[in-house]
Length: 315
Image (cartoon, rainbow, N blue to C red; front, side, top):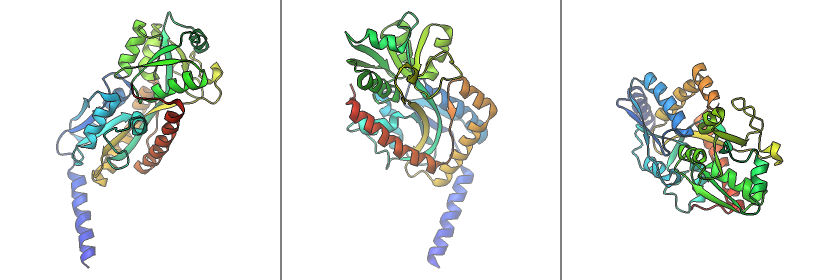
């Protein structure tokens, strides 16, 4: 009898919590600079969720340590439903790449939803090599200096595996503080090649200021149909993506996680949003929190294997 009463009381309390939430502004932490793939998606979603909830949803960029500063901040935040994290695949990569990332991906977070994914792209200045094969061949003697959105991002490991393990080049990685600074480095010719999730680079490739050498998707992307795949350059089976997901601090009430998941799925289903994502080379994913948690475990294992094979390290 006592257990039944306790269960009813808990049910009533959590139901009331879900109905009263949010009673104040909600914060979404993005651990990368404005203008990158993660920031763009977070801001699109924040505007829609704010309208749906009748509360401000504030995006806060907490940059540093290849995304770890913002991630750790959310891991240590109160699990009250007013702080969320929107980050990239780097959260799964850094769990292995960084010997002490400052968080435990299994214990410190509640996965909310896998929002969207985008292939990575190798880019160069418009005056640079005309193809991925030309870039590789011209780098055989002196090696290749390339940039990425940061150590621990999938563009970093994508390039490391492609250039070092598959092409056999001597490589030097330059870690930038996000996709936007990495693209700026390519525009200025600071490095000969940059690996980024393709969203940030699309407008510059379309304008002719940058050249897309290859995308890491299985097939060419409709937004840039003239950019070949890595597989077309002779690397059969090569396929990598950067995904963007949403997390809450562990212990956040399940009813709140479920509501955010439902509303984020509604956001992804909107025709206007899907059109906007397509223009940014995003594929919406969505689905349940449990499915994302399962996928996350597989991603941690996948990138741990890549890290071991490449010997990649945080600079």
